[in-house]
Length: 301
Length: 272
Image (cartoon, rainbow over all chains, first blue to last red; front, side, top):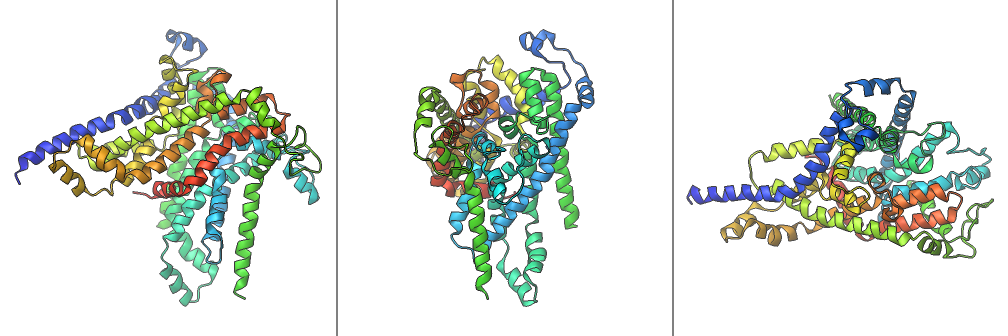
């Protein structure tokens, strides 16, 4: 075989690759990568409703959007609410997911396929629709949750009307909606652990808890990292739940960063200011992701 | 003695399933209740008598068929586009050799971690400059291709044996013919998965359609439902009928094709 024809195939291949990539990469470039890059620029301008009408009205204002944010107590409220949702809702979701996966992975469990389907179903449902349903489940007088609590003689809670309970109520919805996804990932991780490890441990007289602690948990480390990062990134973007259930209330108790960004950008058209919020959210997600990777590494070392 | 843990495990599984299903079952049940029945004390769990009145109201007074149609057109168009574009790009990244391939793919994967909300403000300005605000196209076009879809196809396409493609090239088949006649049939399972992900994703999407669409008549179902909740918050049964209408299509689609869905999650979670 001579090398010449092979070479011409190669260049034909590269040309074909260009054609195959062009449509997909154009869409990703024009409608995602370029907007992401421009979002950073936007954050340093005073782009507002006047600029929307005539782009000549845009001025570069340096860091003043960020300075304004730091002075705005609503920003700090949104930040605190978002962190609460991520730091409470995230671990809770992972915990419920892992428990469900362990139960479904148990040898004694029956109708595994059925239970897996049921547990996963909430994940594919439309968030706006189930948030509407939960809004009524949380009704202080007629909601099923409070009617159930009444049977147990627990005093009624005004779930979405009480600033102390509104965010926990949204966390409950999020756990219900999302645990099925992580559960599937955990099941896959559990099935990859060789049975021989457990048998060896059993021969050494290790009980169920020690087998879990010293085999299951370390073997699942990569799964924990994946699940942790995916859940966290998703939870930082909390939006539809408060939009549908509380509009950020009561007293801004459920105002998230994304909802704050939406209100500033698309209701008041303060797009420069809104881009600064998006920028902060991005930095937050980025640093939290890096922290998770670092934690994982130190744990392994 | 050994029976006990089995009973315990299965009891917890049943209890968990009950808790998981309550919101969905109640939603369906309340959607068939006459007006006011969902707000009773003690609670009425089954509609008596069951009525279709809420659905009739949705389709006549609220004209929800239009919103249903919008959601369907959106989800189907985005799915068709992303199947074509992502399969072409994913295949190219997996199997075609060109300079800088892996570096380019690495850049895309890094960008996968950027939340879409960051892009949203400039994206709105781009869509506005294209004159697509308040048009379904403004919602469709940005969704026609995505990094995750390209990634999913690429992972799967890597398993296609190179010898097969080389043999076709020796037979004189052009690259596009190879893609259509050899690659696409082999990618079939992952294409079903991608179609399912994309359809569900754009059907359920809320924030971007909310931003782009401004007229009631252009709303997708989730946007119309959120709007309805704002206006008719007292009418629980009507809201539940709207929720059922929104959730049922994706739930049925998932139940029929869940094997592909689960497979996709497992592929997405497997690291390089």
